[in-house]
Length: 423
Image (tube, rainbow, N blue to C red; front, side, top):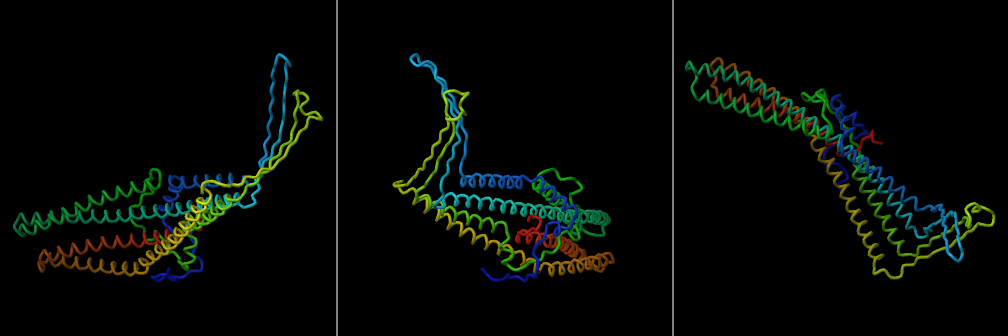
């Protein structure tokens, strides 16, 4: 593992941030709220936490003595003795002495499984928030691209109408008219493709939200400031709080506890039993003085021969622990790589955005001048055609970079995996 990020990262004393502080657009916030209430994956993760909590409660209960009450009654008849009755009421106790820690180890393993399920739920929630934000921003960017394509298509329709009229009176030839036709059909194809992309984006966002998305929450374009900057602290601070790292850590602890349980199963188990109660031949006198009874005892179970079962169980537990170690190491390496990848984009995205903005402005000026010179007859149509294509491509690139900057902040939020609202 490297000791620092490969890309520059601003240092901050407090790396904790809530998603509401990160995602600034009110429509986006409401969309995320809707997803947190309706998404099925998050609901399943929450129910898994409840299941793990119940399993831990069951395992913890085995540390305590078991007490149960019972009662019985019977009536029989024989020709020799006539009728006979028997009634009893008992209070019983059973308790396995955990001298070698088997039950405590199983309880600790269940506890770590519970903690892992909680961390997994946090991970699912962070992933859901990030996925909804990415889908919403992607839809917003495609809406901008669609609007640009429609405007371009409308302007090329007008240019084609003018060119068609000029060709009719012989001012321009068939070549120039064919070039206008090509541009018009290309822009029409772009509009159709982006309309398809927008419909697909809406469908994907609806699936993440888990319910029908209200029209007032559908973005009509990329907001100027949809996502805030994220403070990034030291690598160790980031890696220790990621939910998937916590899940791997708790799984490792549970595997360690399983080793203790498997080892303790090779030693004797000692159980204490006892009971007290009443017994009588008549129900009415069951609780009278003189009808009491009690008993107690102890049992020892010593494994002598089990065909290698206990030793292989221990070996299996040790192998699972080694697997958990490797998974823990992989989780840390993946976390480090995810943050590194996001920071690599972040380090230069503003520079790229500024450069593309300047290039788009220059392309717009070039197009305006080319159009004026073409109208005045100073330049040929090929020069104007090249300026049109350059401007259109530059505008598309600017939309894509604006989306990339916002999506990069979402990716950094996901990679850090730290949301103070989940604490």
